[in-house]
Length: 75
Image (cartoon, rainbow, N blue to C red; front, side, top):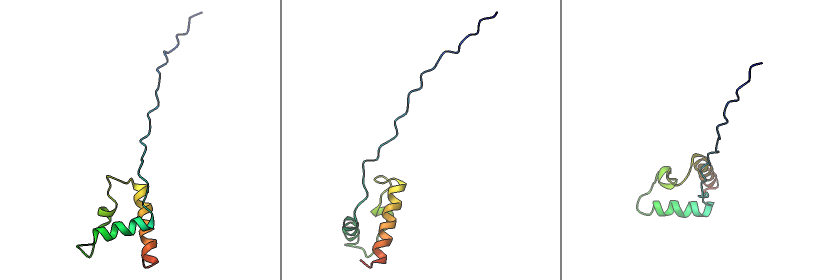
């Protein structure tokens, strides 16, 4: 009988997922932020309000949805 060689086991270490600590702003905070950006100009961009450096795509989508809700409520 021939002996069967076992393959050496290579340890696989889990890669930790990045944790996003930033929470999305409340409606009141969002309104304050918009007012701050529109103090000198009548308009601002969504990117100025929701910087990609601060928020991930899921959070940006939530903020955009909240912004639309505020517009719908005419705040």
